[in-house]
Amino acid sequence: MLEQRIQQHFIDSADLKYQAAPVLGQPIADAVQAVLACITSGGKILACGDGPSAADALQFAAFCVGGFERERPELAAIALSPDAGLMASSTAYGDTHAQLARQVRALGQAGDLLLVLCVSGNDPSVIAAVAAAHERDMTVVLASGRTGGALAPLLQETDVLICVPHDRAARVREVHALVLNCLCDGIDAQLFGEQEIS
Image (tube, rainbow, N blue to C red; front, side, top):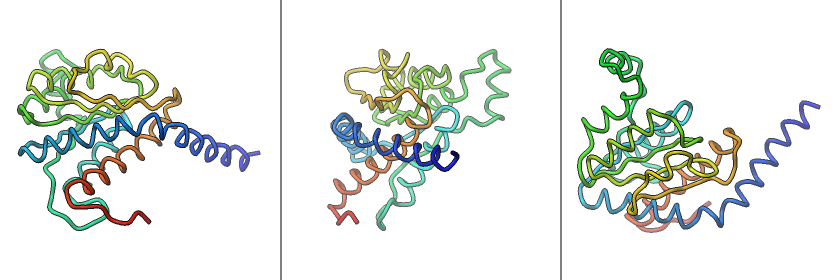
């Protein structure tokens, strides 16, 4: 029974990835182009996520700085922290959802890019971060679930929306991990030439 349940997770995950490939190919390619425009003009990437997605944002920033699957020059990227210390200072001023937005305003500049990972698209701290990015004339790339939630209508014409066509958070996060791998690979291929995929 348990083994069958585990196997079903693998099957469901593989099915979703297979179905999502033709839907997400163009938005991911658009996101690669947005990141390239940012870094080739001297900008930096700020990455953030809600809940468990914050760890994915950290991993993406690490791949940008440390390299993905090849040795290459560092790319400027920072993962924003949903740090308890920052949260405490935000609540002191009456705004419990401001910690990410404060970091965007402190670190972001026109020409930079904010990469957001938010399964529901409805997290108030991430919504505030997107608003702060737009205040700074930054491009936003949003990876979300099904419809993009409350964040989707906030995106501007130059922003990119990557919506995984599923409602279950675990499945969406699994595809987000693949989306980030595709982003990193696409960035490297465009900047430094294609390598064999093995």
